[in-house]
Amino acid sequence: MPAVPGYAAPGYRTLLGRVRANVRAYIRKQLELPRQEIAEIVRANLRAAIWFGVAAAFGLAFLIAVVVLVIALIGLALRALAGLDDPLWAAALIAMLVFAVGAGVTGYVGFKKLELRGPTRTINSVKETIRWARARLLGRSAS
Image (cartoon, rainbow, N blue to C red; front, side, top):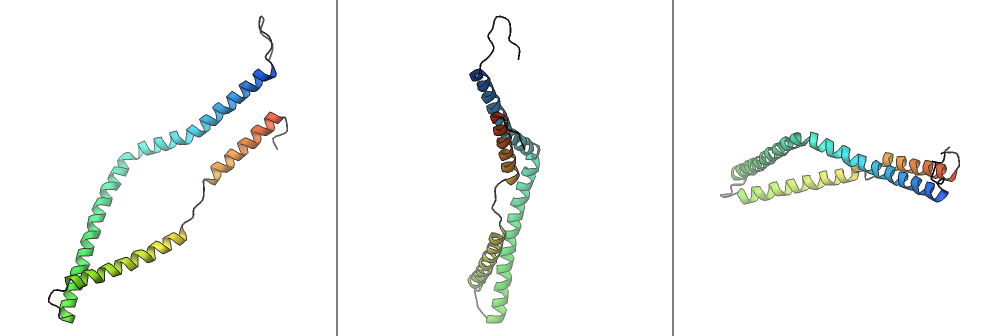
């Protein structure tokens, strides 16, 4: 970098300060990029998310109706087979136990299949960038 007439050539401290500022700006921009991408994706899919929310509400209402139907059918079966006058409490108890066992089994299977890990590609990319920056700053080859 040739010296500008009237100004002294910048020293190592000034150059290192510029490099440090540039590295900080680069890192800040790299950290901001995923936030911007996620925000754009969320904005683009907001209407779809609203429709999925409404669908989930209807699905919950459907499941409640199915539970009521199952309890009524078990009550009818208990009335016919066991001769109970008011079998709805027994039907509700049986349905609750069946649903509790089903929820427990499916929850356990889901927990066993769960893979908890970090964003490995992002971590590896950041490590590679750090290795490259250190190699460049220390004057070694980046290989």
